[in-house]
Length: 214
Image 1 (cartoon, rainbow, N blue to C red):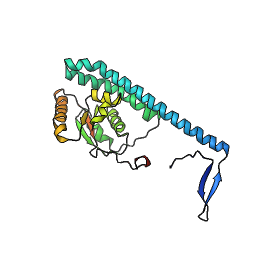
Image 2: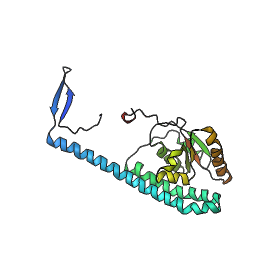
Image 3: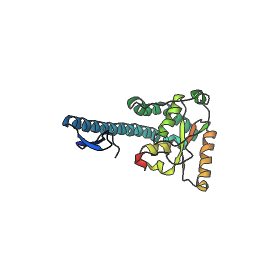
Image 4: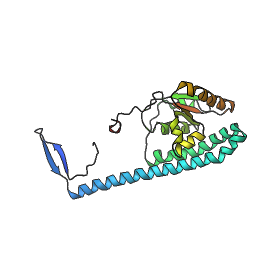
């Protein structure tokens, strides 16, 4: 299946003559492989749990601010921007600091020049963590980030609910349905004088040719 570690005691390698021969792993090596696999899985579950808990706090922040939206949508949007400026770096701490994710930025001055400005960023949908990259780019210059994403995202527990509260643009991939809603969303932020960066992946699908997607 292409896994780095195998669970069986026999692995297959190629001999100089071109014929395969069986080599048997010792019990110590088998145990080491199994322990490493268990460690990686537990680590993955732990990281996912922490991200979920942090996302839950984000959602609770939004729920606390929600009554303000009824009184003044403008104050609500600016309050959300203030909360996001502190909460998003905490969320990004897990993938970037704890998990060691590395991001190479070319042309950082391009992003810095658009600090405190409205901007639309188009990007290839290369992986399932593109939205995290978008949040990171905004946090570098303390800029609020929104996304144009599929409508089903807003029903995802915690993270999706939170992105709905902070008024991301959710689309049904039908221009007739999406046009008015997107225009109202954009106009509402302009009227509130609340700046943000909007990230959009035009493909609408992940450009990923990994084994899991074949």
